[in-house]
Image (cartoon, rainbow over all chains, first blue to last red; front, top):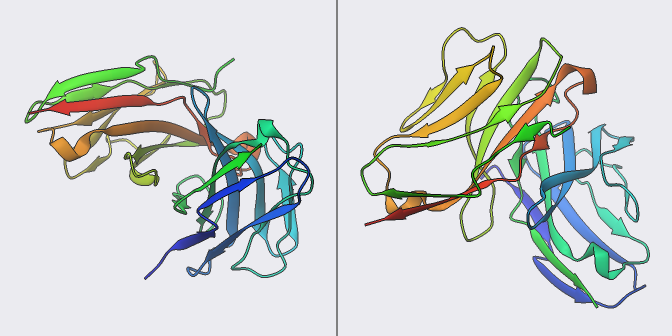
Length: 114
Length: 116
């Protein structure tokens, strides 16, 4: 089954404790992206990747890191999480980044930082 | 300025009726793509429909259609014959050529409630 998977689905952590949210897609997509969703703000892009070893900042990259060492994986790293990073996080992928390519979303990771 | 504006925080509709969810966008690019996604209470994001800026006809996918008015910069989603399972958040989003189509910018969403 073609899908985007994320782990963990739920995470409660404390301020400053480094964490990684994994994202994997099995569709051989070149483009991958991370979003955070907050009430009243919709989804905002954190980082994106056009292909292996090609990543760039989205609209809200502060406090996050990413890497793309393999085509299928695009982990999101929070080196020192803070409470304002409490949010619902989505990983997404599309075949390419062109105009008409819809993004397929993972199930989401709900993160709480206390 | 907001790139994508969804002015209806919430909408109510009765089962079997049609409903229109509004979306206006702001871009100076001639080339862009508009998307609608559905987010049910379970949280996943489901792609519904796509409209390209050069498409001559309004996009349709089953019970979903997109009322694309380019001069007015609007891309309203029309759901015909609403079903209880249509109750969800709906997001309008856009990809533009000036960002290399690398960003998908979302509106703040409209919550649709379908009543029996």
